[in-house]
Length: 127
Image (cartoon, rainbow, N blue to C red; front, side):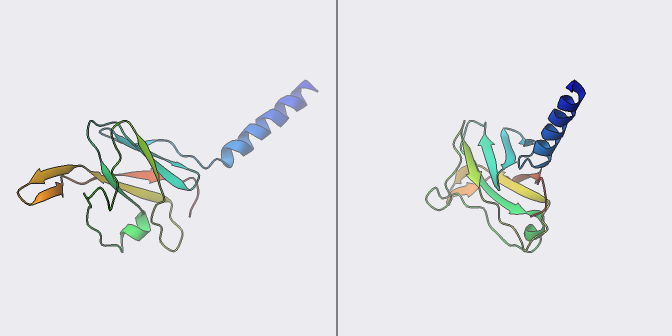
């Protein structure tokens, strides 16, 4: 009886892990992300706000975009906070999303993006 109970518990744990919709954290340099329940949760551990753009790897291959630094159009993620983002996904089959991020600098022409960094977040299943 005890071995059957152990087998049932192991099977239950394995099935719950297989159905998990969360991935391991990715990123670095103070910005990390994890995929949780159909969204990407991006966390800013830097000392200044960061702006982000999250897109599926396949969709990124056919998408032109420019970084935004206007708070009203693309709200930044403030230091010590997280933001859950719906990634831009192509027609399907995405297995990874790219998280692009940057900070705002100010020059003679106003605010602009500093260097754009990115990292990959693996999806738990194709979308």
